Image (cartoon, rainbow, N blue to C red; front, side, top):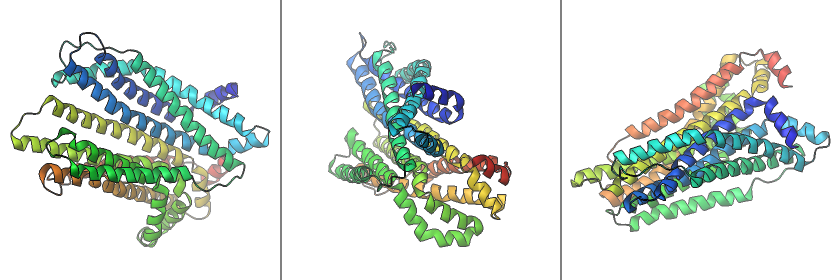
Length: 445
């Protein structure tokens, strides 16, 4: 099956490019920040510099690991789902579920390994640039030399491989059960994990009220709570989407006509598949909103007190900005990959709708309406998660309920989310619609 996996990768390079890109960027980020562990452990590094480097590596490395798994998992899930016909054919010709799993897991392992190896060079350059940023801000002594060692190398390769193999195994297990006609209630473990994230997030947010507003660590429980709440909402995204469609389905039909009618019926049928798009939207909105607003509140509070930012304050600000940068990159990659793969795979569906009487404009309007619904849903629940962290931190830090920064930051976040969703979905659909309806149905069949 391994040789079959290699031939599959060679014959079908397109679907593996998105996974390779996710693995490459994920490994690069993990190696870049874990190289700070290697640098901190080198000889002659003072305690302050070592602590700054270790904190940066630990915090961002943890975020990076989580986001790598989400990015690779969402991409692989879409790719494996699109191969349901191939999996059914392999099952009908005598292949066992175990053999199919070995084939697809083998493909993913190869792609993940290649992505990790390709990321070594960029990670070394990124690590040097990151160390230079720490030096320029005074968080690390100028005498500290950059080191790229075994911690960075092994962590990048190991985490990327585990994420690729684990995500592929889970995705192909669901696909083989579906191909065999096995119907099972949706994951109990997933629901438990979702409830656990919501409960832990709420507890972490409430903990903020027990902290001293002048403590630099006050931001931590509020930020982690907001992130966990965003994760919990992301886990339940199919249920949330179904609930919103049930409540606002008729207004959508009245507002968008035929395109709205197609949108409501398609999204109800594909709510589970669309969760792969909602996940990065909710995570991006929630994490970015909470982190950026809390950092703005903290910076303004320090400025109002007339104090100069300490090394610890600079460390926290740098980490927050870097974490948001990572979230933006990975969320956009997850979103674009999932939308592109899901929309391009709908060529036959679009062809059937056109043969049934829908115009290309109506189909394109349906896709745009779907993108709008997804954007509103993701932004709404992500914003709820973000506000849940922002309010307790603002109350404790400034005695105000809401931050004074206004809606500018939030509008910027929404603009990025909407642009990534609508541009990708509409652009891909427009390209897919260039194929004549009869040809699209015949080729897909």
